[in-house]
Structure formats: structure tokens, C-alpha cells
Length: 232
Image (cartoon, rainbow, N blue to C red; front, top):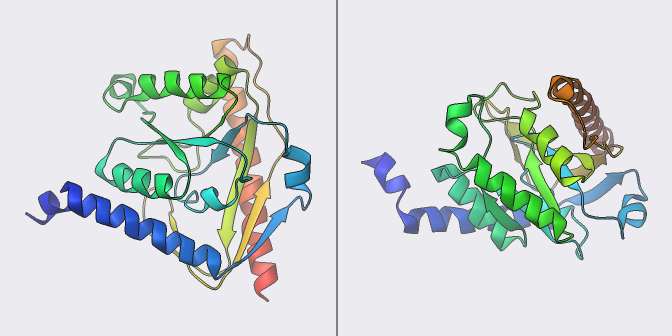
């Protein structure tokens, strides 16, 4: 009964709006820091990008984008995804519904192919696209093939990004999700662009998965280190 109630459109809508309100509260009560410090000046007129994030570490990304960037984010078609989609829309992000999968048979069910096509169209229109690199339901922080293939077929560079807050609660979930808490030091680390060759052969996809994974781990460590140092 409770599970069914949790999927009711009114409940989902209320939770999505509550999530957006809470994230705004976190941002308004936190100070924001970025590395490199001149990131916004360097990237001001250079989109589109594929903004690469880890699952569970992505909730504050709407506040990190330059205001003049149009960014669409891929969010799963699950009930939890619907809540995230409502919150993302309230915070000014465009939404593409779909997600990757570990098994090929799950891709169509999760809307992965449709999401892939919409993502390519988004970037060809000059807009940036945000997606998590690891695939539900894990393993966490392991880059899926989808990230490489989207970059290959779109010709758009990948921008590794991580955002951490000095005050946070870590859940014991598959994606190691963090609940960002108010009155924090909010820190964003951005890595170097990663360009995937358009003629990349299939057997070399795992090599670029490792390259992206190393870059994502580096910016994640950097963001958490910044948040910790600034809270002392």
C-alpha cells in the first residue's frame, strides 16, 4: 500500500518540489568555490559539453552551470527518477528520460536508445548534456559504455565534474549517494576535456572508459578535499 502511495502522481510531484526547495536552501546557505578558479571565464563561450558526473553526487549540478548555458540532463524513467526530473526542471535544467543498463536487453526497457538519440540532437543544437557515467544499479563509479558512445557519436568533449559539500550525509546505497547539507562549503572540481575519436573502434571503448573513470575519481577526490580544507 505504502509503495503504491509513493508512486501516486500527487505524491511524486510534492516530493519533486520539496527536493528542489531543499536544494535551493542548501545552495543559499552555502558558500561556493570552484577549481580551477577561472573555469567560468575559460568555458564561457565553448559549449556544448557532455557534463560527466557520478551517481549520487549530482544533485547540486543545476547551481554550478553558467546561467547562459542550456543544459539537459538524462534521468531514468523510474519512480525515483520522476522525482529527480521534477526537481531538475524546477531548477532550470532540461530533462531527457532514459538510462543505460548493464545488460543489452534492459536498454530498450529503460529508454536508453531513445535517450541516446535525444542527447545527440540536444548537442547538435548547441546545448550541453549532463549524464552520470556509472550505470544503475552499479557497480558504482565504474564508467559505462554509454558515456563513451555518446561522446563518440556526438563529437562533443566530455567535461568531468564533481561537487561536494563540507557537511553531508552518506547513504549506504549502491551509488554511495550523498545528501548535501545546508550551511556548507560547496566545492566544484572540473577536469580537463576528454575528446573521444569519432572513428574509435569498439575494442578500444574500454580504454576510454578507464580514462574517464580516472578523471572522474580525480575530480571527486579534489572536490571532497577542497570542501574539507575550507571547513577547517
